[in-house]
Amino acid sequence: MKEKLLLILLIALIANGMAFANAYTFKVVTNDTTQVCYLVGGLNNWSTTATKMTLASESPRIFTVDVELTEEQITDLTYKYCAGPDWKYQQVESTDFKFSEMTEAGDTVSRFQAYYDPGQEADVTIDVLVPSTVFVCYLTGSFNGWNSTSDEMTLVDESVNGKEFMLTIHTLDTTTLEYKFLAGPGWPYEQTSSTNFNYMADGGTVVCDDFKAIFDPSKVGDITINVTVPEGTYEAWIVGSYNGWDISSAVQATKNEDGTFTAIVPNVADIEYKVWCYNDWPYEEAADENGTSLSSNRTASYETGPVFNITVAYWKKSYTPTGIEQLSDRQITVYSKKGQIVVEGAKSEVTVYDLWGRKIEQIKVNSDLYISRFLKSGIYIVTADEQARKVYVR
Image (cartoon, rainbow, N blue to C red; front, side, top):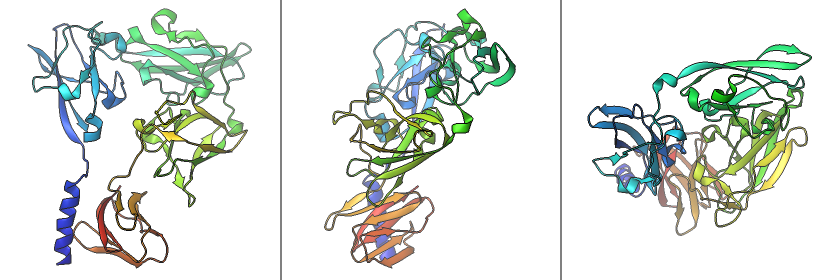
């Protein structure tokens, strides 16, 4: 009987708010000049190359693409279209499209600022001469979404004039190719000149003689960041120059007993970074309660650290883990973390059931904190002091 009741409870709990992604079709009607089309917006961090559409009809000329979005993502979602992999090719209409106004007929773009020719896609070789004090050289630019750590160049020559580095890259569009150099893996080592090199104007053989800092492989190690956070913070993530500001590969911090978090960024020399309360862009730290961005990135150096203690005062958007509930009578908190279920505030007994009502764990608690063993990803029912809640373990 208990198993049946648990299954009924599970269905009810899922109906009350488990969020899953759904596929949505974006469709746009363009003029006949358009050879390719890209969808650009909040769904892909406004990347002009991330979401290429498929030509679905020649006449009328229609492009489509299916995108998986959660209910949270589609809230206030705006977007544009580009007739090529660069803002140079964006729609003439300055007003963004809104997901809330999208119809079954799709959107219409009558004209773009320019039209991409797929014949401009090519492999090009970049050759640079840098000072002899540079140990390594990285290339970044429009060809890789300005990733500062993904493309290390090859040292091909060294003389009294300096060091020569070379790299062959693939670019979707030689006419819009811009690039710059870094004397190390990340933006702290960026060239001093803020002006990008332009392939059409500068070619692929250039001189770059000054950098903000020079990476020294003998001064590399693990940087430890201890973070004091606002009350009610469940997670903390470090994103920065060490990984090209790629939030999908952020370093997750470990929560300490006192509510602070500790993150270790491995094998780095100098980094710029910020803190997020969840590994998604809206959850960035803020300078004030209005969600104002920090005036500059945080910095850390292995040589001057390697331990740094910081305080985050506000979040642009607070995060609550999937499935978390405050159990009303005793303010018991239930959530998942790194493959385990955490229960805070229970006074007597905690029981964990799987999707089929099978008992996974049962324990008499003698403290305010219960942490389960490591569990497989999925939905579980937790009863704490005779109150039941769902939790999703990922």
